[in-house]
Length: 475
Image 1 (cartoon, rainbow, N blue to C red):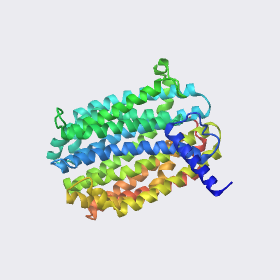
Image 2 (image 1 turned 30 degrees about the vertical axis):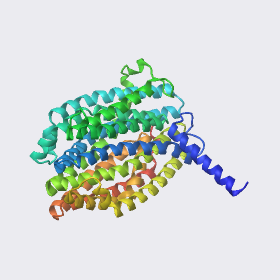
Image 3 (image 1 turned 90 degrees about the horizontal axis):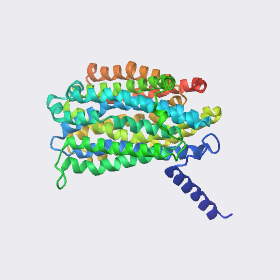
Image 4 (image 1 turned 60 degrees about the vertical axis):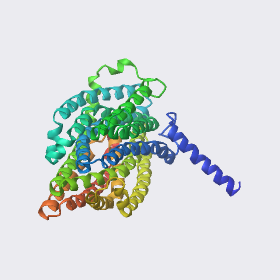
């Protein structure tokens, strides 16, 4: 066989694998065969899914960053997003429980139990989100003021906050149902739902913010309407594929009858999962408030700009690391412990390469990236500083994400919860406060505390991973 033929065959296999990943193939058995192929089949749609989720934030940032009162608008969007991270935390926590249980049942070759578990998770999400939406809508202005926004910024942006938190059910369902699909091994559906949601958001944002033809210009409120509508459309797409009966999960109406034993089992896994992300998101909320009070409106806007750009790059890495959760869950269900360990190592290796590349890009090109999203030079200078400092920890972020997803995929949600508690609340928050207030470093002190704490969290996670408790968890 000639070298040219070998190269053609190699490219043909690579192209075939990529096509299979994007199209979605629930017939692939993740408990046998090539681990590299298994990671790629899961990682490609998961990375693309998270890119789409991160684009949501950047689309809003781009259009509101060019409004007349851009510092108020960016601050309102950023602070609202910081609060909604609590919704994200609950959604991710429940979706992790769903992914872990669904993956474990699929690994045990019991798709009926997997489908039942997924539906009970949706019942839990609906119950929790009802309260959040009502309270968020009523107290939107107070939330912005509590977060450190000026009276003017809160008055300008509270309608945006009302719509975003009031419509947060679509956020929760988007995350949760995608978690169910990922647990079943069909990451492609999760990816496509975000594509559809994001395309709708990109189309609706400029129309509703700036106006078009008979459609009036809603300004900042238009961004909230566009984002909520786009995500809602994505949820309808998920529901269609969940109920059409063609996938591994066959849903029937009786699965929606509350099964309190199943709900109890899911809550047992989800509660620490929710807590671990609430701990992290509350830390980010505190940091946002600390930046707002020490750096003013422009300092807050600069930080929020940098944070959204950083999340644009980190979310795809989170998507890649999600492959570890599915592979660990399914392989533990199939009693393939060594294969689960190899899956973690392979996923971590790919994530380190990705994050190292992104670190170099964001460090050297921060000024050019930031200038695309805002014309305000003061906001630009703060955002560039924040982005360059925070990017120094990207490699450790990448490893830490894989280990968190390993624990969660195994159903060991308490380990990362405790790591987050010590890492964020007992280390990152005090460090940021001391640097910003005591040493008079202001926002710069907050920026430094972020990669330092993330590095410490990753090192602690490595030690706990090697102890192996995650291998013995029963779900």
